[in-house]
Length: 255
Image (cartoon, rainbow, N blue to C red):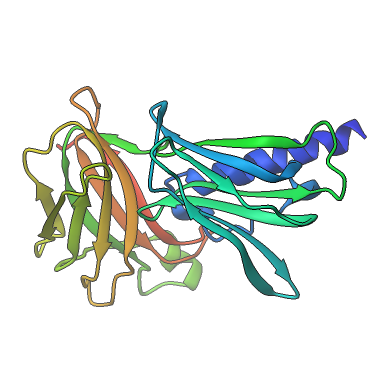
């Protein structure tokens, strides 16, 4: 019994972590709901915060699935106090998703019992923006890590060619003021947003080409003068050698 309990705790915690980690290598991993997740009451509060303060405008959805069909059971936005009251839910298993501007604060399974136990929770609290990449500047480059040529398929995957992604539209949005700045990557894949104040931002990258189309991505970054790195490197990579593929964001120090 104790082993099963810890498997459930680990599964829920791991699923929550996957939902907010910036590295999309986890994106293709199937997140299982182990043990039905935590028990919630039929009606409960969802609280979303950022840096310990209430975060309004977060989209919260509760869904259930049956035979491959997903049904939305609740949908709402957090109010000025960062809270939304989830409507009464029947007994069953559910998934709760909370996000702002495409950045997830929660992606968690839970269940409602026919008769609520003493462990049933009345409140679920989440933090938005905890895993932002920290950099001194909103500048960097876009790279397409294409498989090499001339060798075996495995050799080609191990010896990738880094090709600049040019012509991408990049938009940097302040989630609290709504201000948006835009620029495009140049022929070298380089981009820069000048004179950006310290704070947290959502970076949208759309379009662009490296001799093939570039999938869009949404990344969360925090500008800080105390950051050790100052260059954002977004690398698009196909699946292979244990990697799921996707767009990877890292922060490096410019040479």
